[in-house]
Image (tube, rainbow over all chains, first blue to last red; front, side):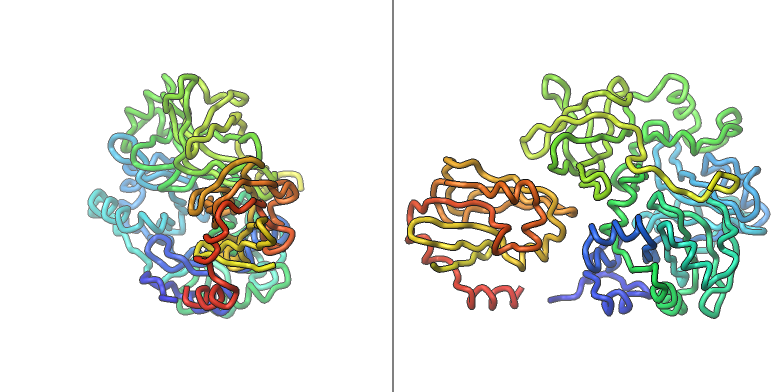
Length: 371
Length: 123
C-alpha cells in the first residue's frame, strides 16, 4: 500500500499505532476510523471520544486595532465578548457570502481564532489583506488541537486538568495538562458536552496518550465526527456552507449580533439585512428521509414537475435515530418544519420531511442551567 | 459446491445451475458499517458486470455487480431487514441474492479462493 502524499500532523504515528485507517483530508493524512464509525459514534454519545483536529488553523490576532479589524470582517459583537469567552462567527465576503465559519475567543489582550483546515490559507490571506496596521495576525503552525467530546469528557479531563469542570459552555482558560500548558475551552462539534484542547505539537502525543489512558476515552476518527455533527445539525464548511451561501440562507442568523444588525460596518451587511427583513429565497433545513436508504450530498431537491429547486448538502444514516437524515437547501416556501420535500438520487425518488434541527438534542453544559 | 470470487470482491457459491452471491469479508471491511442494501427482485434478469444491488455503508454507497448472468430467484430478506449481517457474516448469513445461471461457462473467468487471496494481498 502506498502512503498518501499528504502532509502529516504531529499525531500521525500515534493514530497509525492505534489501528487508524488514514485518508487524505484538507491536505493532510487524517484518521477516518479506528474500530468503526458506528461504534465510535455511539461511544462518543455515551462516554467520551478523543478527536485530533490539528488540521484546523489556530490564529492569534493581536495589537491595538485587533478588535476594530475583526469587527470589519465578522458580524460578531466583539465589544461585549468577555475575556475567556468564545463566539461562533463567520468570515464574510463583501457580497455576504460565507468564506469560512470559525470560533473567536477573547484571550486577555488578543483574540484567538480557530478556522477550518481546508480554508485556513485563504482565510489568512483574506484577513491579512484587510486587517489594519495596528492588528497583527499570527498563524500558530506548530500548535495542535484535540477535542474531547461526550457526557464523560468532563470526568476524564478534570482528573488530568483539575478546574476544567468549572468552565461553562463557550468559555475557556489556561490549564496545566500532562506536564505543560494547554488552552482548554468547553466547546465542540458533536452536540455533546466536551472540550477543545490547544497544545504545542511537540507535546500533543503525550497529551493524547494521557487522555486516551482514561477509562472513559477512546480515539475517534473523522467518519464519526461527520455523523455526530450531522445529528447535531451543525453545518460543515465546503459542504453546507460556501461563498455562494449567506448566513441567513444557511440559518445562521444567530451569528449576526443584535448591535451589528443595526450598526452594520461588516462585510455583506446590506445583503444580509435585506435577507433578514425580506426573507431569503432558499434556506438550509434538516430533512428526515423516508425508508432506510441514506440520501447523500449532491442529491437534488425537486418540485412537483421534477425540476431541480435545491440540493442536499450533507446526508447520511443517523446511528442514534437509526434512520437517514440530511441537510439541504430548499426554496423558502418549503422550509417550514413539516413541509414535504422530494429528493432524487441516482434516478431514484425519495420522500422527505423538513424537521427542526438538531436531529439529536444538544447536551451542552450551560452554567446556571438545571443539571 | 464451488465458490468463485470476482475482482469486485463478490463471491459466488455454485450448486448445479443455482448460484448464491454476496460480498467478501475484504469488501465489508473496506466498506465499514453497512446500514442499507437494495436487492434485486426475484424474476429480474441480471447480466455479468451490470449493477444488481446497492450497498450503503455509513460512509458511502457502492454498487454490487452481477458476477454472472442469470435470473434472480431469491433475495435475502433477512439481509434487507438487518443489513449489518453483511458485516458480521458476509460469506454466510449475509448473502445478497440467488440466481439461476444462464451461462455456466462465465464461471471460468472467475477466481478460486487462493487466487482471490493473492489478489487481495496485492491491493
